[in-house]
Image 1: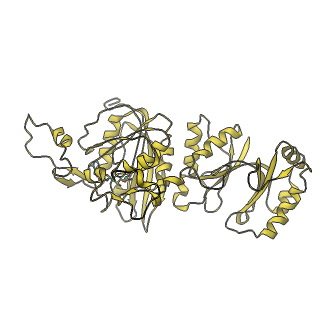
Image 2 (image 1 turned 180 degrees about the vertical axis):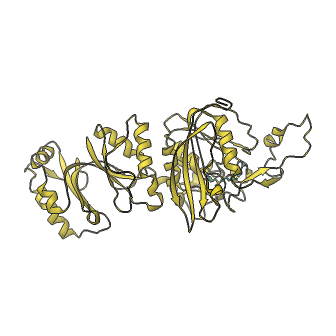
Image 3 (image 1 turned 90 degrees about the vertical axis):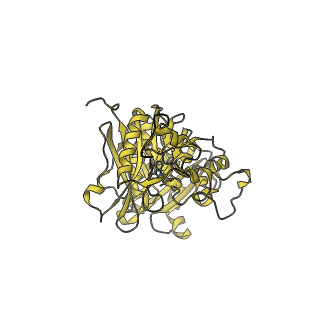
Length: 421
Ligand SMILES: C[S@@+](CC[C@H](N)C(=O)[O-])C[C@H]1O[C@@H](n2cnc3c(N)ncnc32)[C@H](O)[C@@H]1O
């Protein structure tokens, strides 16, 4: 059936809209069919697209874990003005639909325009008049919501059933609002935003029971999203301070209600606060990986970048004796405090990431990571990293200040290391 999908207008993440929708379709075993022009799509101009989905249930599943989709509508009428919308209405279909509901409500929304109550009543009135006497209007908890939505600047007008909504049947919040960084007990200087973490987890098509790894776990923002989506989480970081909760990682400044369940402010604190399973986390430098489990379904991460989270690697002693293998430094409990660090060359960290991902992911496993670009850099530095074991799937741009951007890059492992050489 043809449905109308409306994205939430979150301009910094607008490039994720279509990719997230397609990933959620794939995860739900549905071929993503977008009937609108996705190349020209710009959420800022119009957040509506037409899609083809087999039923309401699939639409609800997709919306239930989407960050970008605000609602999906089954249109009874499409027009280019309110008058046109009512003129094009299949009135019989609407009346039949009213009759199978116990109670109904009308909702009216216009993109970037506030509709005053008087105007809203005038627009809704003719539709309401079609409702047979036995139909009950319930403004608080209706059985079905009917929507009249429009984007006057593009002359798009739709009237239909609200099939699925970000805050489906409750006007309180969306599914990920409780993970908002602003209300999180344990934070670091570079904690990844909760919205971006959920977007990346969706991009990685994480399913319940998947094994996921974040090699730059920091305060655990990305793994919190993955864990909330019921994946088994593993993480590592070079910096013991952020894992153990001193100097870098910090207790939130303001009082967080319910944070009294936390006995220790470290990388596990937020998991405990949200009632999520404790992830497996180790101190590790990705240049000297000690974890060699090659079964991960996904690697999702925010690699170090810039001054706040500059990429570091352990500086090994020049002479490492036979008795003292390199990994000893990594496993030592004093790791991160005593071992010396040196800076990576620009973009070296991404190549290390691809190398370790080629070892740790299973075939078909997804790698999703943030890559920074700056228009003032040379084109070579702005080039996305590549690796023979990975196929590039897509990237979603997240513009930052001035000439800088982050790109959430998705790759799929297609070969084992050494194959195809
Ligand atoms: C951008 S932060 C990640 C933030 C994290 N997603 C969070 O929510 O807190 C990058 C992290 O990479 C870590 N890091 C830097 N170099 C590393 C290396 N060579 N191996 C492993 N971790 C490293 C830093 O200690 C830092 O915690």
